[in-house]
Length: 150
Image 1 (cartoon, rainbow, N blue to C red):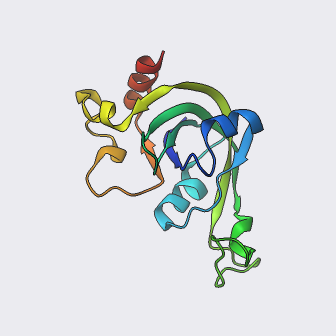
Image 2: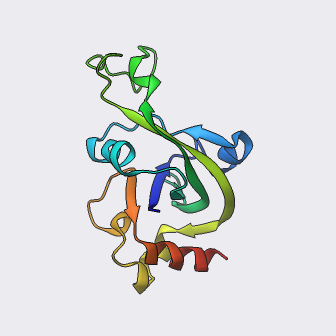
Image 3: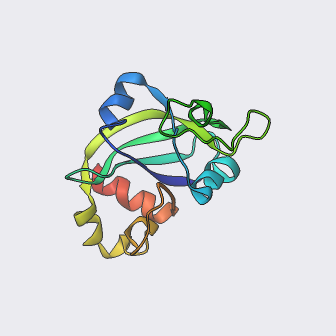
């Protein structure tokens, strides 16, 4: 089992939205490394730290799990979507998505709080210049964060 931190803008899909829907496709990823994590490394049941980004209080807002393996992101084919990619075709889709299922909402573990915790200093999301929307989380980091949230 692997663990991931997946960023979502709460104006697009928040942890409350995920709780209400139960499951959501992780659409709109347009970074090759993040796409490759979904396509090549994620497995059913992998743990997900659901992270609110690009908002006044960024941080971990809940727990989810990977519920469907990678498949073509339909937004890449929709000319009305901001995620449309004219170079992507049904025969050769560039972009993938996985589905994630709601597990539970947590208190907000803010980015500032995470930065102050020595045991989380190595997390990829905390590294300068990191802009990836999906990053791996070590088993130790996962356990430490769950302990902070319980």
